[in-house]
Length: 619
Image 1 (cartoon, rainbow, N blue to C red):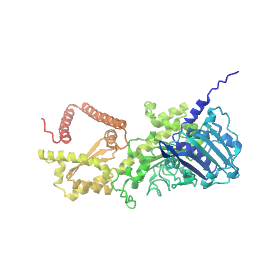
Image 2 (cartoon, rainbow, N blue to C red):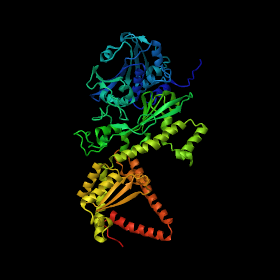
Image 3 (cartoon, helix red, strand yellow):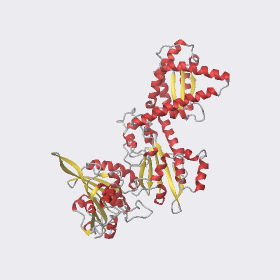
């Protein structure tokens, strides 16, 4: 008797199918929705059926069946049988959502031990059914069972809203690996994902109906999925009021397509043809982060002093962080590797990269359509390290001469990193830098500085700002400060008036601001206003980002490791600042060097008083 030596054993095959890489139950369900939409369905219905199971003397509800029904074209017996073959599939073209031919069987077996499929082209009473069963696969089943005539069960027909003359029903049972227990929880979590994946198709009129079921009766809470747009330009959407019916973001950037915020790149596919890749960018409108924009005030139930990230729409945006990768009007992935996960400001920008299926190999699209691995791997790519001293133009020309196939993606990454992200983050920082919430940290420092300043007034001669105050009225001083805030530092008039009012109310004579001054080499600048010493930190100086901003960012949601990294980075930056001063002294001729040394000592004495104003002078 001749023994069989299979390359892959059936139990290993089943294990591989179960671990086929779907990020969640929702991602696996999306594969079934893909099939319906590819079959020209205008309605896809997702049913999650909940049953009652006795557990330790009490009954618990648990999802028992998941089914997806569409009113698409349906399949013949041969096509239906092919659809359940791993890797065979029925749609391997270079267009549309599908391509790889693994979605239906792989996604099903990743969640359930059995999948049954009914499909019909002449009414649901004339459907054909076939199935896959993991137990039979383990026992050596080698062929997809031949489809047999079997009407769509009456239970499904009664639940369905859009049962058509043609269509397909996929039913999962023996759910051993489904992520959530209850029907509503499963649908809620699935809706967030499929609303994002299919946002374009939903906006164009396709419907995905979500139906919770118990005992073959529809539960309250059934609904159509709403678009979930991480660029927040789509309306209507699932974004909480007031931004469900109006955009929460606006397009950002000039673009080269005639549309604001849209940049086009031409990328060569493996077939040698060039295809367009569109990069879209958006940024939060002022009303999303500022409570008092005229005509767009926040809803009355939201406190105007609330952190914008704590609003319902801010929390919604926090779940849509990253760069959205769109292939054939379907989202592959929301890639978070481009974001600073601990920075709450990251939720307020959006970037979308839209490419056709003909560039799958270039971007590295996975067979389960959940990622573009080659592009995502470039999130940590630093062209300066690779260029070894060359400019980007020289580096790009070198790659072109070498025929490097990654050059088009590197050019897109360069645009995102150098042209988009930095500008987006700067815009968002500027958007709220004059608000009450952002001023809190400055005010605490100002209060401590005021204490030291008053002590020095008692011990020293009048300062320059004191002398100026003797020759200016209160109104003249306030007008000078207002002009400085608005014209020089670009605060809004409303923020400028509020800052001045708070300074006067607190009887402060020292003011700490943030400002942008890309043309100045100074880390901070000093202005002498009658009665007010005004210090502005230059946000365009590297020391600001490395030393101040990294510590001023909110700590909510940051891990211990992230917080430790921020402290280490700030400490390193502070040490480098000190070393840069030492080098400055070292480069001076003898007399200026002596003067710089004296300045360092004098500044050190005053710094001691500001940091520890109650300490006794030990000199």
